[in-house]
Amino acid sequence: MSEAYDVVVIGAGPAGYPAAIRAAQNKLKVACVDEWQNTDGSFAFGGTCLNAGCIPSKALLESSELFQRAKDEFAVHGIKVGGLTLDLQTMQKRRASVVKTMTNGINTLFKANGVVGIQGHGQLLAGNRVLIKGADGTEKTLEAKHVVLASGSTPVRLQSVPHDGKYIVDSWNALEFDAVPARLGVIGAGVIGLELGSVWRRLGSEVVVLEALQEFLPMVDQTIAKEAMRHLKKQGLDLKLGAKVSSAAVKGDAVDVLYSDGQGEHSLQVDKLVVAVGRRPFTRDLLAQGIGVQLDERGFIKVDEHCRTGVANVWAVGDVVRGPMLAHKGKEEGVMVADLIAGHYGEVNYKVIPSVIYTAPEIAWVGQTEGQVKASGRPYKVGVFPFAASGRARAMEQAAGMAKIVSAKDDDEVLGVHVIGPMAGELIGEAVLAMEYSASTEDIQRTIHAHPTLSEAIHEAALAVDKKAIDGLNR
Ligand code: FAD
Ligand code: NAD
Image (cartoon, rainbow, N blue to C red; front, side, top):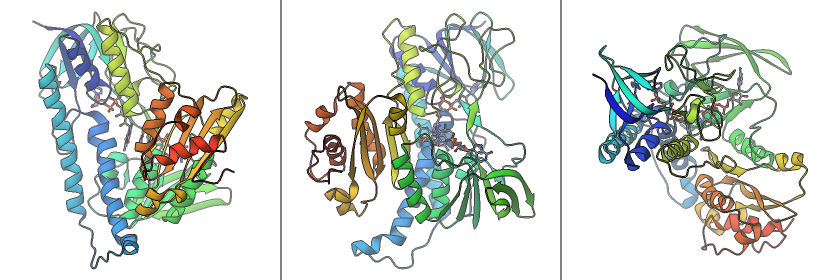
């Protein structure tokens, strides 16, 4: 006999597990099924984000930054560290333990909220039934009033660069290296390429990043992108733009890479090659034939603005649908869907989704870049405040970067906020809240910011929009 639920969620990543929890909070009977298996064979909820993405990468970014700062920056504070050495095994153990704590946390949350967590592969059948196949071969079918598809994404592979998981690797493998590669190649100067390139550079690798586009970080405000490139190059990341990789092959214990750029053909030899050229939606064996759920030409599940697929009571959220592939975007979609299912209000404001790149300095933004506003034709004004003029940033010895605000000339609306600097990812929260509440630039100008804090940079950038900065030069 099959079990019956109000909601069955397929996928327990940051889109699926919040959908399950909110649906249960809404007094619905919920099951959430996930097939994630770690490299040690263990099963875990949390999806890419917790197991092989956001959390492990941030754990290593933190550890590697501490190592680099102890090596290169402590002396200026008058702290002398003799005999500094790297214990990568301990660093990796800590990364794994942070991940385990977080993924175990989902089991606890499921129990506390009454969500039935199931490990196995889920497939949507006709009539909103879900077939579950366990790793041990057992099968069962769940009946569901509503099904939420949250199956996530998987790395894009390049045919000419055959993945082997040892020398030619993806981001997951690159988080689990057990030795620092002397020479690391990275294909793709996107978010993953820059974050993982930074980790291994700080730990001692020579890092070459091959990026096909001529423009560096095209989705980022170009003032900020230029500043980022300057710092990353100074840190030793060898960023090669306009570099088209034609092939890569493992030879002995190394990888030979062939690429071309404006100067012609080049070869490069590295010990590990990370392919980080984007991710694609993952829907393998998710939908039984003829179920009616449509995919677009890039393989994303087609949904409307409320994440409804064309099939009654079947929803899809997270990386498997259109929009930025970000954990917090998926989370909000999951929560929205669970609220809509329960008959409550639910909405995602796609115009105000923050992005963060966890390099040093950090890069964070929300809303439109100056380039986008310019292209829209709306008259605008810009305010910039450099962290070099921030007392707190100086005290931290982290005075690189700036905060930049782009506002409308007509009604003073804040159109975009862009930060490169210390804790940019935390600072952007204020801008997100301001934009969510349709704050004007004057609203930020009139808001008191504690002194000395990094958040004063946002305040001063807002003042600079109208040439009223106190601590910065109004240029
Ligand atoms: P996923 O997290 O991919 O989860 C989907 C889950 O569904 C998986 O557990 C999968 O096993 C399971 N599943 C799939 N099909 C089935 C099936 N048929 N049956 C059962 N289970 C199934 N985003 C950020 O916002 N901030 C960051 O700092 C950040 N860092 C990242 C770093 C790296 C290295 C990577 C790779 C990604 C990072 N991301 C980050 C992106 C983020 O991880 C994704 O946007 C997010 O995980 C998407 O959530 P999701 O729930 O849609 O999918
Ligand atoms: P990305 O889209 O950020 O970057 C991929 C880069 O690879 C692009 O610059 C692209 O031009 C380049 N590229 C594509 N094909 C290439 C080729 N053949 N040769 C050379 N360069 C090529 O993708 P990603 O870095 O793989 O990350 C995947 C997703 O994960 C992103 O959508 C991102 O949002 C998410 N993510 C987010 C965070 C974060 O929020 N901090 C961190 C990591 C990943």
